[in-house]
Structure formats: structure tokens, C-alpha cells
Amino acid sequence: MEKSRRKFLQQAALAGTGLALADVSGLLASERNNKNNEIKNGTMDKLIKSKGYAGTDKESPLKSWEFERRAVGDYDILIDIKFSGICHSDIHTIRDHWGPQKYPQVPGHEIAGVVAAVGKKVTKFKVGDKAGVGCMVNSCMECTSCKNGEEHHCETTGMVGTYGASDATSPSGITQGGYSNNIVVIEHFAIKIPQNIDLQYAAPLLCAGITTYSPMMKTGIKKGDKVGVIGIGGLGHLAVKIAVAKGADVYAFTTSADKVNDIKSFGAKEVIIVDEKQKQLKPLFGKLDYIISTVPYAYEMSNYISCVKPNGFFTQVGQPINGELTINNFNMIFNRVNFNGSLIGGIPETQEVIDYCALNKIYPQIEIIKANEINDAWDKVVNKKARYRYVIDASTF
Image (tube, rainbow, N blue to C red):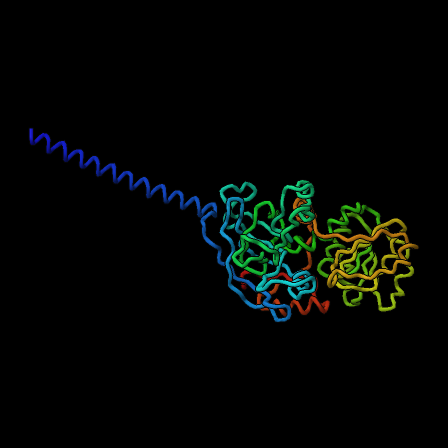
């Protein structure tokens, strides 16, 4: 009897040990699976280390800076940035041309890279996909504009810019942009980059491309229209290429005589070199169907506007210091031209321009630079020396 009792206790103990080991083993396996899922989905509750170039005040050169981004949330994706375009807006912002800024601030809103992690509720992207980020990273998503795909005109909170905007989720208190090696963004505000366009060419389309594409499409330019483009830089050269692809006859206005051959290679029908007296404009008064101006500073624009036919449209997308432009209203009441401004485009339209350019092989003319060349590139942009978009190799941060 005692022997049987001992045997029973030994078996029970062994069974208990087996159950305990099974429980521990099960727990460890469960933890491993959860951890693997968290890594796979990018939802680990851990801040993302990042490094890039930041402005530290409105006058100093940009400097190398290590910082942190928020952890990847359920609806976020983490993008390993491969290329980031340099936009004149970056310079205006960091140099305080559009209002006081918070520093350190990493500029850059022409971002192209590869998805490295996804939140568990992300449906639009998977790890390994090519993805980009343009000029905004959030909005209310509830107002009429947001629901109609015009998130950049959010009527409640306003769009959240890719850099320099207040952001409670950011460890630095503001959004930090693409002059860096990675970015965390809500999947809705990321753009799918087609396989048939290289990332370095896709990057500039996320600002320069959409900024020029949107107003031209809203105006409805078509085959045979006479379209003017003022300022043939990062935005302007893409405006020429897109308008040409739509079948328009493009008249390019520039103050840089050394750009003529390039502009003709972009497909322009005519290149007009304009001097300070602007006498070259008068023969074109009332001749063009539409003009888009990409000049990012205030300039004498009334004669340019008069080149548009009566009741036609003139769109200013270049944004001068403090947004201030001077227009001679005497000219306007006689030329009968409709003047307007334009911002960027919503997420659907940004996807549209990326897809259109990839399909039609419309590529920006770029020069790839290293991170330590950013400050020199900024000087060249300001001095009209860019040919035509500087793109930073993010592996050099």
C-alpha cells in the first residue's frame, strides 16, 4: 500500500513537473511569437533612433543631429529613407522666411525609401515595399476636404507638415523631416512608389511634381494649349515636362541664358530669356492659355500675367518671403486675367502624379549629393545654380 502511494506521488510529481514545463515552454513560445509579430509588424513600444541634418537656428549651417522618432503605432509604417530631395521650401522654412521656427529642425519633404516595419493594423503597405512621403503627415481626416482627398486643405486642425509642425507624438515636440535615415508616418499619408521608377527620381515628385501637376490638372490643360512656365528650377523643369506630356505647347520664361539648351531638351516649344526691363514679354501679351509661376521670391510679375489671354488663369506656386507679392491692379483690370495660388495636392492626387510620371517615364533631372554637401547645395539653390534638383543619398547621414 505504501509502495503504491509512493509510486502515485512520484507519477503525480512527474506529471506536475511536465505540466509546469509545458506551461513554461508554452509561455516562452508565446512570448517569442508575440515578439516576432511585434518585430514583423513594427509595433514594439520603442522609440526609433534616427540621424540626419538639422537647422539649429535661422542663420547657421545645417548640422548632423541624432534624435528619436515615435514608436511605430498600429497604423504607422517605418520607412528606411534612401533619397530625399532638396526643396526651396526647406530653405525658406529653416531661414525663418515664413515665420518663427522651433529648432533643432530636420527639413525635407521629398522622401523616398523602403518600408522596414508596419503596424499591426496597416493594410496599404508591407515590409519591403517602396514608399514615399511628401509635404504632410497628418490631418483631421474628418472634415469635408479630408474626406474628399484634399487633406492639404484640412478645415479643422489644418494639415500637419512633414517638418516643423507641432506634434505631441514626436519626442522633439515637432515633426522632423526627410534629411534623415528614417521616418515614421501614418500609412494614409505615405505614397506607394511604383516598381518601374527608381527611388531617386520618385523623391522630387512628392513636392515639386505634385505642386506643379495639381494646378495644371485643375485648370484642365490639354493638347494644343499654350502654357507658360516661369522659373525653370526644381519645380519649373517638372512643370515643363508634365505640360509637354499632356500635349501642351510650352513657353518657358527664364532669366538664366545658360539654361536654354536644357529647357529645350525638356520639350519646351520656345524659351524666352527675360531681362530686368521685361521687353521680351510684350509680344506675348494675351497669347497664352495658362501660366504657372514657380519663382520662390517676389518679382515684377504684372507683365508676365498680361501674357495670358483674357479670362485665362495665372497660378503662382512659388512662395516668397512672408508670402508677399506685388501686383499692379491697373494691369489686372485691363488684362482680365484670373490670378490664383496653389498649395500641393491631396494624397490621391499625389499618388496620381507618381503613377503618371512612372508610366510616362517623366523623370526629374537630378544631382545626387552626400549629406555633407547639403549646405553647399542650399547656396547653389539660392543662387540659381541647381540643375535641377539636388537629391540627398540618405546612406550618407
